[in-house]
Length: 60
Image (tube, rainbow, N blue to C red; front, top):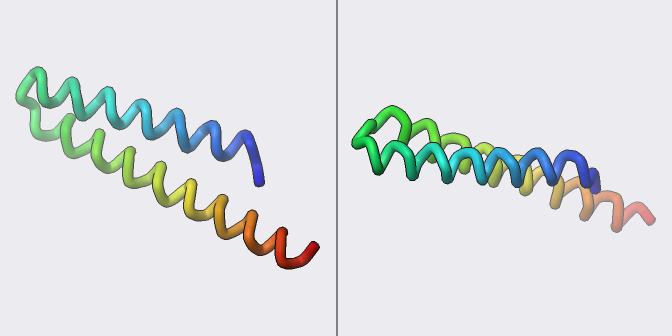
C-alpha cells in the first residue's frame, strides 16, 4: 500500500466533488462532467491500491 498514492487519489476525489459542485452552482455541464470524471479516476486509483495490497498480503 502506498499511502502517498491513496492520498493523491483522495485529493483527486475531493477536487472532483468540488468541481462538480461548482458546475452545479454555475450550471456549467462541462465542469460537472470533469468533476465526475475526476471522481471516477479516484475510484480506479483506490481499486488499484486495493489490488496491490491484496497481492502483497498473499505473497507475505
